[in-house]
Image (tube, rainbow, N blue to C red; front, side):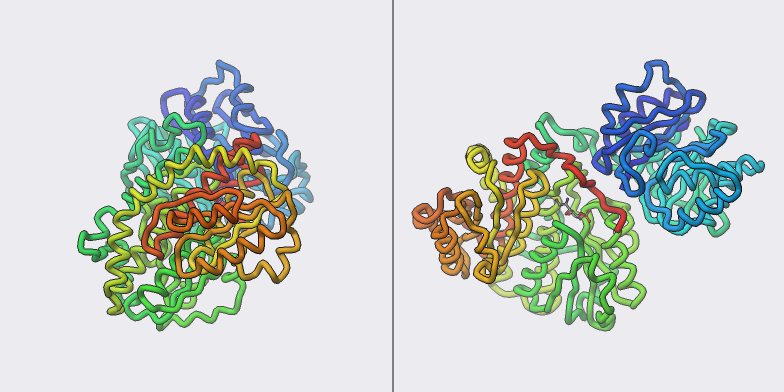
Length: 607
Ligand code: M6R
């Protein structure tokens, strides 16, 4: 859950390390530090800016490693910040992941006379490596030896003061990739910091250990031998990873939603409504034979999976179930590999629970399909096949464009399954046509941004909020509530509206907000009644609806947000957009850290 960067070459490492940490700050931002060969280490609690301010201007060296932290073991203090070193200061190490047996290793080292300065599991690893280096091992052998003692997960970069032109990196469960340039090698937790420097990258796999020097990188397997890892070309633009002049990444990414949908549809949705999904070619037989589909993911990804499940059931007639990945891992595994497919939805492709759910399914022989944004991510590589969102980097911790990208890809999958299960009919064709129009519908919906900003001012101080939906709008109620609580810190819950009278309605009072998702679908009248019930309790109310119901809902609700009319099954793609904007604007009105909300990280690579 942390960010790692490293550089070994002929130029000054420090500017790359600091810029790289800024680019990776979404992965963790409670403390940061760097080590530069010949200079030593600087660490600071707080954001990367605090570290940048503390690094002296003459901090020059041609190799170094750096880390931005999201604490798992030990408070986010300067002492606990990475890089960590051994007692003699002979090695420096940055680590992402968790060493599960660190307490027993620490006790063993302690019995041999070692003492520790920090509360972290990572320092134990530094001590193990340092011990081997002092015994005369090369850095790579020392790291391999230390890792053979470790249970847990790691993305690791290590340097030794006696071999200053070398970085040893290793990966098990936490992502790492190498950037290749003339006379330089880079390492990073994801591609973003590398974009200004190189497009040639090598993705490490679990169990890899690589030795980086300015002119070479050699990949070994921790269980013996060397490995050949082909390089890949990055086609993300540098600008795509920056804010494009917007105040926050979250806003920039919301404004990219129409283009995100276009990119997800490009080359896949034909003018005649047929769907071509290159990514699933290895999965054709299991998908054709699927009698049941289990979708999994975490947080927003689980909610977009619910949108997908509704669409697959509606258009392809295949029963679907959405199970949170963190639950699926520990339930009795009752998924039949003969006729069931597991679909894992993940923007980052690195979420640990989702990855482990995939692994569990694979252990039981269940075919697995990933719906992933980050190319080369672990889930994309470990599933039997993957469909990419092509949404470009999503930096804001709160997902927006990737949520829509996931829903779009799942809509394509639903249409494709309708074809393979002989369910194509006028309704699927009408939906496909409307899906093709969805980028312009999304653009029209987002144009309400200014009026939503005004609404946000009005509701920025509510005591709490319910988001209510029915049927296809239920996942949007969940997502609207998650978005609001995540970025504005207002307590918000999403409910299927029919559940209100079973308890939650007791909370309604004049300070409380109810957002009712009531577009013109088959359940409109039920939602109108639920809105009426809420308004009768004197709480504050916003209705999200389509133009034909604007007038009547304006008589019931304090405010109405209008989205364009579209195919009923596509409405959730639009109703979610004002909720994302609303959460953003409320958070802005409340002065919150929008792109990096407290206690959160973009990619959750621990349980
Ligand atoms: O990278 P993933 O899609 O696997 O991430 C899953 C969740 O952690 C993520 O969607 C999270 O809920 C977002 N912060 C919500 O905005």
